[in-house]
Length: 133
Image (cartoon, rainbow, N blue to C red; front, side, top):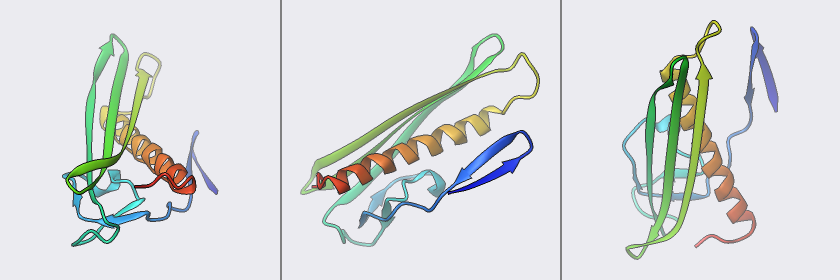
């Protein structure tokens, strides 16, 4: 694990997780938010089709507080049925009263990366425990 210090904040980087499924992916959006445990392929190499979606709500929660809530779902589909579903939710609140704050765009990105990472962790745990369809 590599820790990079930038000003007063830090960013942690690590190796990307292994690809666990390859197949057609139904997803419209920034590929950065797509879990790295899946990979697009023209046909269902892993025997499943993959559907990924997310929803983000953002705005001013109260005077002086910005907030973002991201929810994501990844479905593994085989024979027209959802065989396994993963979900994650992340809420971030930031007080804007005391100086420099992050924009809602930055908070949104952080929340979407967090739900992506959470789904990756869930998938890796299932894979290690052989709970995959």
